[in-house]
Image (tube, rainbow, N blue to C red; front, side, top):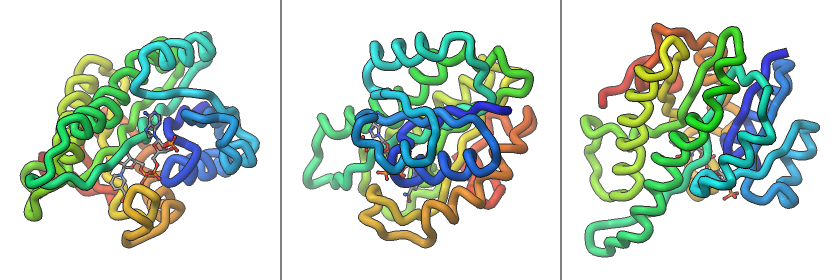
Length: 221
Ligand SMILES: NC(=O)c1ccc[n+]([C@@H]2O[C@H](COP(=O)([O-])OP(=O)(O)OC[C@H]3O[C@@H](n4cnc5c(N)ncnc54)[C@H](OP(=O)(O)O)[C@@H]3O)[C@@H](O)[C@H]2O)c1
């Protein structure tokens, strides 16, 4: 049975991933900052682990608890969005978004490298955003979010080279109705995840270091 690790799995897209992978027969390890409150995740019958992706010790302890477990897919999903504008710059909030969105996936991926290497066909996915595309930016604002996702893209591109032949893919889920978007969007988390599952399950070296839309086309950096 393949094993998947999903960060930020207690709600939104991460919870939908946990459900979808469980339904596909995977052994699912879903992380939450507050496992005691992750009722919906626990109700899926999956393994729930505490991880704060901004906390080095938390990530290290998680890796310790996973020692010897082969991880076939790592889904770096945890993320935050603040609606910052140029007339109300909040450097602390920008740095926070960097820490969660860009450094978080790098910390977790690095910590789980031994687990990925135990798998016969491992792969790393980072849930990024088209808002991190510099070429695609036509509406401005969202400084911290855009900067953090562009930085995530840069980090995962390097990781794709460093982890080869383990593939590392960047995936934009679309505009999805979750708490992050104030429940606005074009589709539900379950719908977005259903579209992303084939890309994630079929992940190969040919996809490594690429920035994909959930519908399978590549996005401009
Ligand atoms: N929704 C969209 O339209 C959209 C579009 C493009 C990309 N994305 C990306 O998709 C991913 C999931 O977003 P979502 O829409 O599902 O948002 P969400 O419903 O707000 O869920 C975010 C998840 O990230 C977790 N998280 C936040 N900070 C964390 C930290 N320091 N350590 C560990 N976990 C942390 C949250 O945990 P808590 O419950 O503890 O806060 C929650 O589980 C994010 O990376 C987001 O940027 C979303």
